[in-house]
Image (cartoon, rainbow over all chains, first blue to last red; front, side, top):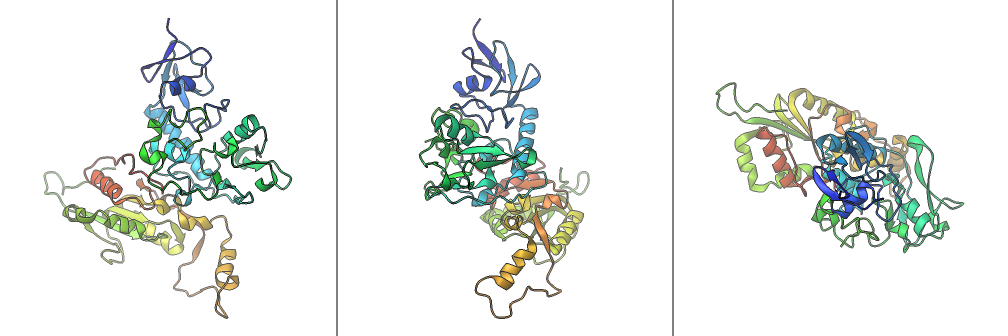
Length: 243
Length: 191
């Protein structure tokens, strides 16, 4: 028996130990996701990659692929739930795309386009989250944080610096910087760190290159995120940096 | 929501009444609407404008479609929005500010009193004796700027800052044809 499962009716091969997400990504199939990245341990927190396996909900980034699984992915039911998750993320932060230099390269925005999100639907929180512009090379724009912890994982597991962490609980959860002052300038963070290139949204921004690629010619201007699977999810790639 | 385009069964097609307004917006969405260029001529075969900056009609009568640009930042915006909701069968939030508050909502994390103080009393370059405007004709600002769906029920949302002329055209023509509007890749934008 071949090691394969069905993803929306299509045969997807896998090697033992791979998750459903890993196997789908290797086959070039798009399962919506925000907190998953091939280079890092699965986090399972954004829930965008929730699929139905044998009729039961499961996060595809944490569930091992198994022979004969029947996985539903891009169904109207699941995409509607994903749209709701995105709407919750949009109202929780201050996601003001017209002023964001990540616009067009942003995984949150592109995923919301893909899911056909036309309105945030819920009442906005409009939280007060001051930016940290203290670092000479990198700006932290906390208003856009979706708590995916990719920077936390990159800084801890790749850079070996532990610059970032999440603090607080529930709606008070927020990204913090590991220094006595809480400022990025007072850490050993560098613009060459992996954590500087991994943010899927517009929180960690290299200064002075924001509009090097004009709006309209960016990653998800050229093709929807569903067609970018593989390009942006290659190992080693920064999000939104695919050629 | 389907729009009835005939006068009862078998009747001749009638023109749809469309009203438009800019609340806490910059009229950019209206300018983008005009970017449908010469397509406004076939559109005018299908619609006629009621209250709109294009007609200068001051109050909205019974309409088929209402297009709302801008969020809700003051008391007058609330009244106008409610007038539109009461009169329009289908109400559309047009553009980023109507959909999520947009640029004006970037003041929402600040105290309104502090903003007024800084702008009119303590900021740079103010004339001697400057004070916060209090003419009774001026609508009172709200503490926060709200997307229109937080104030009235909205039937459709067309995001973008502004939505492109092509997106507005595609959206309106599909709606007038009685279809649920769908935007292709490249037409759906938040910026």
